[in-house]
Amino acid sequence: MPKQVDHRGRREAIARALWRVVEQRGVAHLTMRVVAQEAGISLGQLQHYFASRAAMLSFAMDFASEQTSLRVERGLKKLGDRPHPRDVLRLTLAEMLPLHADARATSRMSAAYVLEALHDEAVHEQARRGLAQGRALAEQLVRHAIADGHIGSDRDPATETNLLLALTGFTPLIELGVIRPQDALVAIDLHLDRLFSGNDRSA
Image (cartoon, rainbow, N blue to C red; front, side, top):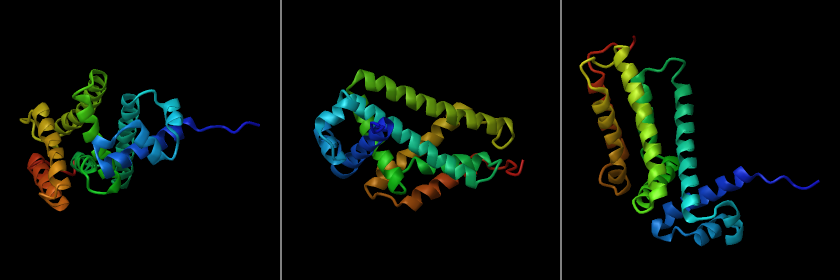
């Protein structure tokens, strides 16, 4: 009986190899040949799964986003059945920062993807769509928190969402050693405390 090939698993292995290339060598070395070498396969084998560098990069970015979502889901389970929206936002923001090895790999992957998107129209549209969807989910959470009385009703949900996402801008400061990871978390906590200030967390 012929051996079953796990094509999804192969693609994920290639994506992880791509992450390692980005993390260890930088975007300048991100070629299909280098990724194939890192994955321990031939260039022809890699091209069997990805016809172009852009296709490989897009899959790797989608996979990175999935892994971030899984980390958030695992964190949410630890918060209980009805986590407070402040805790959900704190967890989500923290997972988007390079605070541990997995998050650092996906964060650097995201940076590489944005750079690629600036010069490739197809990648640009996919990246824009993904970011827009992520932002929409964050705004939905903020709107629910306002509706449930956790955040003041005088707050504009769109603006508050933009301010929350701006906190992910700590990434290059952390990566380049300008601030420490704990400094970013202190700033996030302070911002969330101010956002939820005066509202009943136990509601």
